[in-house]
View 1: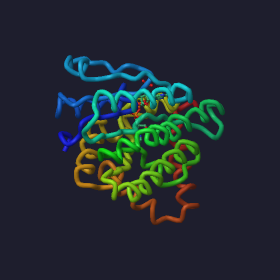
View 2: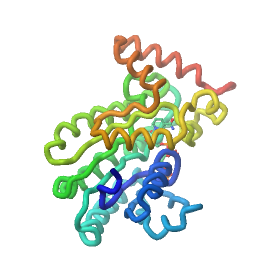
View 3: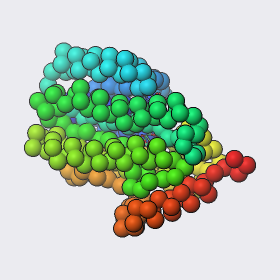
Length: 267
Ligand SMILES: NC(=O)c1ccc[n+]([C@@H]2O[C@H](COP(=O)([O-])OP(=O)(O)OC[C@H]3O[C@@H](n4cnc5c(N)ncnc54)[C@H](OP(=O)(O)O)[C@@H]3O)[C@@H](O)[C@H]2O)c1
C-alpha cells in the first residue's frame, strides 16, 4: 500500500508515534521521499539511508508565521521536485495538558490549540489542491480522548474531539476526489506524552497500554482497508464502545473520576 504513494508528509516524526510512523514507512519503502515538520530533527540512528531521503522542515506550530511559511515552502517543493504521485499526509504532532483549566497556564493551553488543531487544518488546507489533483490520503492522529469530555484534560480532549469529527466529515467530502481520510484514535501509548503533559513518568507502567509501533501498524492496515476510523487495540475499542452508549454527562463525570486517580502521588 505504501508503494502507492509518491511522497509522505508527517508532523512530529521526531518522537513517539510519529517516529514509529517514519521508521515503519522507511523500512517498508526506503526510496519513498518523506518530509517531516517538527521543531526537532528526527534522529537517524540505525537508518543511515533515511538521512538521505528525509527532508526536515523545522517548524514550531505555535508560531503562526512559521507554520504558514513551512506550508508554502512544502507545496512549492512538492510541485517543483516531486510533480506527480499520490501524497500521504500524516497529521500527528500534538500534546496534552493536565489539571483543572487553565492549568498549567493559559498560554500553554492556547498553544496546544495551535499544535493539535490549527496546524493540521492549515497543513491540510495548503496541501488540499495537490491532494485533489494527484489523489492521496490523510491520517489524523486523534485519540480515544475524543469520545468523551474529560475533566482534568478538558482542552486536550476537546482538541481531539475536533480532530475526530473534522476527519470523519472530510472523509465523506474527499472520497469522491480520490482522497481517503483516516482518524486514528490511540489509547495510552508508551511515549513521552504523559511526562510532557505533566502527569509524571511513574504513571506509564500502569497506563501506557500500547507501543507506538502497534499504533502505526494498525493504522496503516486500516488505511489500506479504506477505513475512516481506527481505534487502536481491542481494550481501547471496548472502552470507546462502552463510552459511546453512555449519556454524555455521565461519561464526563466517569472520565473525571478516572483522570483524577491518575494524579501522581503528592500532586
Ligand atoms: N501517547 C499517548 O498515550 C497518546 C494517546 C492518544 C493520542 N496521542 C497523540 O499522538 C500524537 C503523537 O504524540 P506522542 O504520544 O507520540 O507524543 P510525543 O512523543 O511527545 O510526540 C509529540 C510530537 O509532537 C511534536 N510537537 C509538539 N509540539 C510541537 C510544536 N510546537 N510544533 C511542532 N511539533 C510539535 C513533537 O515534535 P518536536 O518536539 O520535535 O517539535 C513530537 O514529535 C499526538 O497528537 C498525541 O495527542 C498520544
